[in-house]
Image (tube, rainbow, N blue to C red; front, side, top):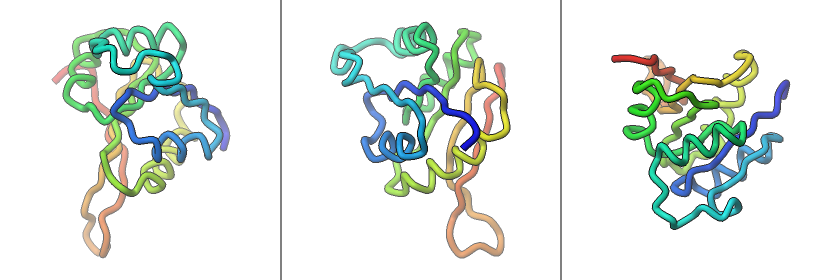
Amino acid sequence: MSSVFRFYANENLSALLVKALRDRGHDVLTSYESGRANQRIPDDGVLRDATIDGRCVVTFNRDDFVALHRGGMEHAGIVICKDDRDCEGQAQILEGWLRSPPCLNNRCLRVLRRNERGKSQPVWVIQEYGRSG
């Protein structure tokens, strides 16, 4: 692994995915560990607090965080994962992608499964959301 990324795991993220990211050497702070769980903190507050702490939000909440990203809110990065049993597969494709970009500031990524021609199983891919549209 070339870089260690600092993540903030939103309270809806699975503990298995947190573990998979940590096993790859990443610094992952959960909402429970930060004392912010079960407080109904709005998503913009979660994103703002993570950004102040220099952390990229990792979440299952696609709609709200994509809207914040597209709305122009400055952030230290957003990674949207899929609520799926294959946490290792998601962590692995994310790890491969994280080797190339210099930073995640103001970038919004989505980890998703796609069917690909000639493959018997769906594969994990990364989609990046732009700021508008």
